Length: 201
Image 1 (cartoon, rainbow, N blue to C red):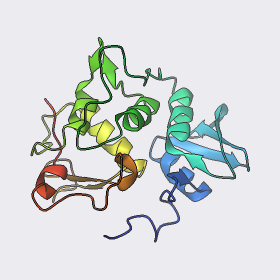
Image 2: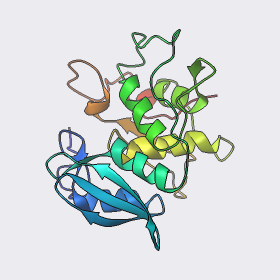
Image 3: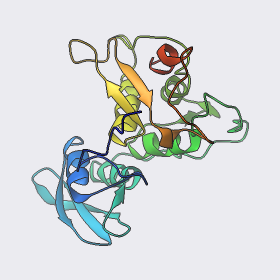
């Protein structure tokens, strides 16, 4: 199995954390700029407006995607939804062994609600139900496309966009870090196509 991140200075390491170069890529994709980066924190601002600055805490000079996403959301004045599963939503239910709590935290940090009215949101459901083959066409909700981009940027999945560079006919292959338990490969022969599909209604 290829290592999707080993060759990249901007991708996450084995612990899912990013270097300064990786943080710069993440914040730039969200319309922000990296003002400074120290061992224990970095300062993130809106492009061209250093007075609107938020901070992302670091550990040993590296940052989690969720921490960076939260700082960008605060800079843009976006509400950060709760990522904890509400009562009535069981995390024991297995969606191909995906770590629902981790995925929910990442998309919530990027301003996308993982739960609404005591249930999984359309965006979270779309990610978790990646066992049902589906193409994510232009008619799908923007929140679903944003959620897909968030987990891809966080290194939890590898996103391969369609022939025209969009989400139509895109494939999403989940990384081992997004899976629970002892997993030796991303998919078995019978579910390769299903696990690479984007779904949700």
